[in-house]
Length: 299
Image 1 (cartoon, rainbow, N blue to C red):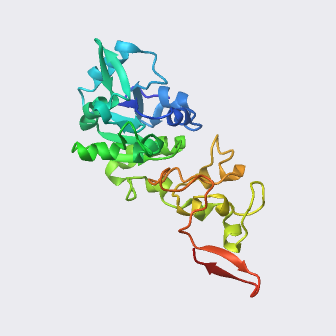
Image 2 (cartoon, rainbow, N blue to C red):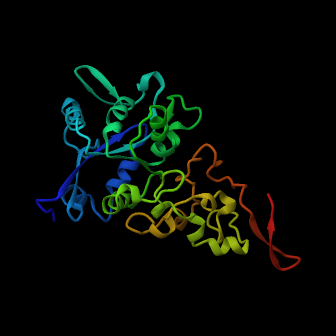
Image 3 (cartoon, helix red, strand yellow):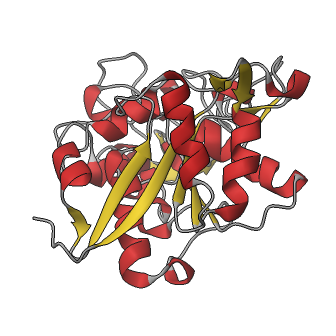
């Protein structure tokens, strides 16, 4: 339950060029539940006040836009950006809303809100790295949040939580870590991803790892064996999906018989190859039938 003396942290959740998958995934948080997040303390003594969220708020139109204007005058809020930021034609390919007959683009809102935020979270691979929204040929001129920050010299601390979509634990767990440890003590990798969730390769904890080490590879979907030959990007993808799973720890992509697509990587999707195309920069162990022992085969 909330303590009447709980610290309240305002949160703005802005949707940019994306599919709403990131919002849908995080809204379906299992623990804490959406009810916990909206109504109760996210950690003891601290409550998140989600002032602007296109999928949750009841306000619309000019009333919703006024919420941004009024609250953004302060500098005690957290900004969550979902989706890449279109920049072509002054960003007119993604509009947050309209007030007094003027359309406000996501680009304008980010440039307005980000400099005064306590911290910014780029949620999902499109926001973190450009993702599908910025994939070639990128007709809208979309860029990641980090790219926008760099080009506009915005110094606000930024944490990337990629995934297509991201697991809700990655978002709310990171927020909890920030609140308990302090932002400066959250350990991130070279791509500003929290190491708590993105510190190890999927390959390290994959239940099919033994098949890979034995050189036993599935040739068709449904076959027993590692899915590497069928396009699995697990050997080069950092995330804790094998341990965390999805839908309340029920299952995950490889558990369902499909290969990892590498969606938490900055190279996704343009530079990882087709979903079912084998990556070629991993040494692949196979069984040497003549010598009856494992050997490495270069690619």
